[in-house]
Length: 342
Image 1 (tube, rainbow, N blue to C red):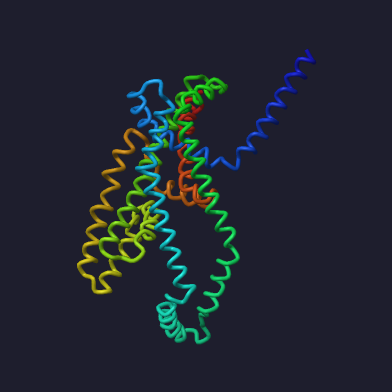
Image 2: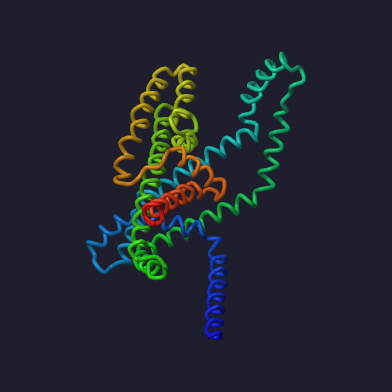
């Protein structure tokens, strides 16, 4: 009996040790796996429809789904991101090369003239700031290049993970249910609620935010506001702020157009913000969420900001996903382990 217990203890220790080792091996690619799995959940209805036309052709159906998602979603998002990076780089370049220095110096001189009234010793050394910025870019060029390389590698791995999650996702789910110590019915309910929560948060909030950001960029292009793509990206995050939302970006741009004498552009942009951008939340979100539970926008905002801080750029998706998982498990807890379920 003691020998049997020793064998069991040794086996469990070995199993936990190997599991921890494998976990550390996969940890650098955790974000790729999480994002790939999340996208597979979102694209699974499309995959099922394609598979209905070609039964028993899971590989081909998965490949077609990935290609469609690349054409409709990933490529436009990458192009939009490239436009944002280019415009941000142009702004940085204009400052570091001195092309945009005249306007900045005039603005700072005006501010200094006003500050001297209150504090005569106040001074802003713009030349020193520019030199420090240029030095930082030079010193971190290798880091920037490495970041771009890692992003491209992560993107390719995410597409590969998406393909296999679509193709073998059902088998993976059945394996996890078989290995779980919970009842099969409870495991299936966890997966169902998690899928519903993912669609509610990801589709109902983040996709709507991305659409609003794109519409902001389109409006800025139409009414000739500089750096439209960059402001659209800022508007994507601003749309998650409760009550204020996209007005954080549209209102200052409207004031800018009116102040520069473009009255028609200012009025047009204000109307664009109220209609095309403002109403999309009510129209699109209700269709995307369906029967899912919509979380409080403040929680979603903090999950996005916290995810960006903790996970980097992928945290924009991982943060809300972790929040979705938490609320899915809380629903299970209330049913199975809460006061009424005990």
